[in-house]
Figure 1 (cartoon, helix red, strand yellow):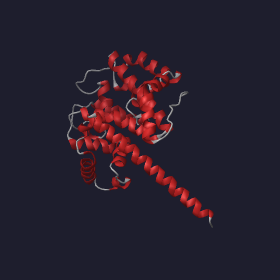
Figure 2: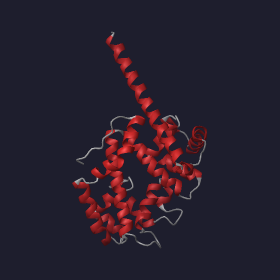
Figure 3: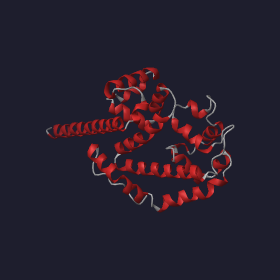
Amino acid sequence: MSYQPIIPSNGIVGWNFLQATYDKQFETFTKDVVLQRETDYFIENIGNVKSAEDLMADRRLLSVALDAFGLGEDMYKKAYIEKILTDGTAADDALANVLGDDRYVQFSDAFGFGPGDTVKTGSVEDMADLVFTNKVQAFEEAVGEQEASMRVALYGQRELANLAGDETSINTQWFNVMGQVALRELFEVALGLPESLGSIDLDQQLEIFKSRSESVFGTDNISDFSDPKLMKKLIVTYLARDQLSSFNASQSSGATALMLLRY
């Protein structure tokens, strides 16, 4: 990408700047020739795709489709991705439903290749929405190359709104948070939890996340983060803790260097 997002600093100051300039920076970013060429190709050709097999056969279409849901790393898992698409999401044991990551459910739903589903590749509106989401994901990735915490905050702000709007149980929503790297980092840091938490039993992790969230944010219900004020508190808490951690690490490194210079 030729345009690199401008992030003047980490922490809350950088976040406020990004929020204030987001629309303009996003507009500039999406004018990138390579990005526009791939999205134009998707719009022009996705209507010819009638099955999961068709989509799998076109790498360029599949790349845009996966990237729109932050699943680009799965590009080479062809059999796995095709099963997610062909299973659909209606059955409880459909692959997308048992992975504990709502992105796969969204991905499968976006195309409608499952049993009894209506194929959506002919819907101009649905495919335009997917292309827009692909551009959002690409922008967030570019932001992350400048400052990783900003990508986590942007993704969390967007994805939590999706989670908060679904009708799954509180526990299922938390398992989704725990199963997505960016969302997990957002809550682990904001709640002051150690990365080593991931090494204990999953049900124990769940209870710790819920208990700490109740203590810090006054709720253990992910759906409550649809409230803009609570969402802002989550993001600000995450960024403040992340910045403090970075500062402490740099101070520690500096102190170590000074100690070594004395000997």
